[in-house]
Image (tube, rainbow, N blue to C red; front, side, top):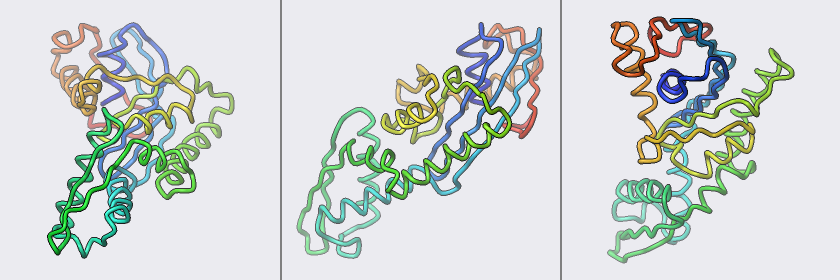
Length: 239
């Protein structure tokens, strides 16, 4: 759906190309290289390769940051007055770091003593960029696995011309987008909707376009003249 929105909603003049959809939400990471080409009133998507990690996402990062915060607070989770509330504060701080460098997080321990630490963008960069960390290694495994799969089919594939499409709440993290672009070397596309803080819009609007195509009202959304969408390979969304 995100690729469909990019091709018809954001780049209508492009008739052929490749889109690397990088979808990381709260719980999972999914990478998919998709080839698209238009032919008169039809558009065809071919899924070239996919790679996924079923437990790598924003929740895993929250847990890493929470463990780090416990060391800075000098308390264990059991010694916190409300460990779940403390974890929620870490999650909120992480979201704030999409637009600023650091954020204070204050919690109370079971004795009523207030403790404070700072969560920073440099902490997050360390987890994603350092291949020695669990998150960094697993992200590298996903990226290298996708590249290897593509290389088996197309040894001379040109990643430089590929558009990298970040999707999902975790893709709001600048260092994560930078890591993906640095590894694949493609053109990072920042949707105007994502710049407003809602990186889910590309999926929602792509689903709207798909529905409009099959209901015959596509002109109301994109004026593209496309009346048929075909997916070759794995199904990205119900046709």
